Image 1 (tube, rainbow, N blue to C red):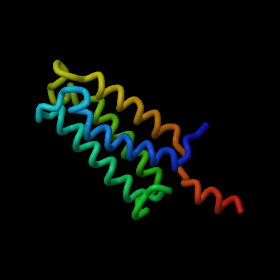
Image 2 (tube, rainbow, N blue to C red; image 1 turned 120 degrees about the vertical axis):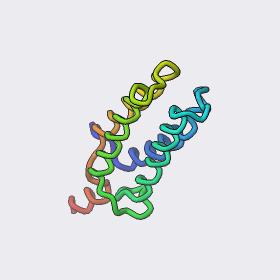
Image 3 (cartoon, rainbow, N blue to C red; image 1 turned 90 degrees about the vertical axis):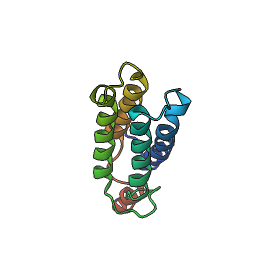
Length: 122
């Protein structure tokens, strides 16, 4: 079963907000790289979601396959950032867990928005 792009859009906005707030929710918001990786990636997810060509995109310029690649690349960056930036001794589990969710979500999402699939079916 594939995730509809509308559901993926909802997950995008929730994920972006979660990433921005995660340092303070999980207690590692001390202003170091562990904080700013989350905030930066969360803001990026929100930004490219706003310009994605799917039901919840505001401007609808970024093709869905490109959006999903950005999701996957951001997830890989999120997953390796504790070791890459040297804060793995402080926190790494939330980074890997959120990254795994994001990769799974990207892999299981339809690449064609629902409105385009309905139009093609007519």
